Length: 119
Image (cartoon, rainbow, N blue to C red; front, side, top):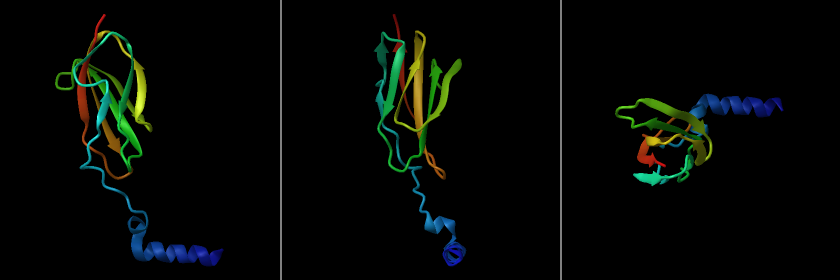
């Protein structure tokens, strides 16, 4: 057992942790948003937000703002999730939503879309 530990310590000392555990740079990738689609007009206040899963992403940050992120009156959701879909109850209003993928060393830019909830 002691021999295995000393071999591991020697390997880490020679190569460093980064060389042993290759961390994928996802920063140039783009999150593909699925639903709600851009400029959707919806008549429900319970919405399922979904996007295509990204290889090498550990989690996703989703944000929802009203009316948009350029001039937000309120950020109503700012959450980190480990799946590529999540549901939220929202009020009748105009919104933008955005998602970025993250791992322990990198993150993508946000992908965003707009939608409206009306009666």
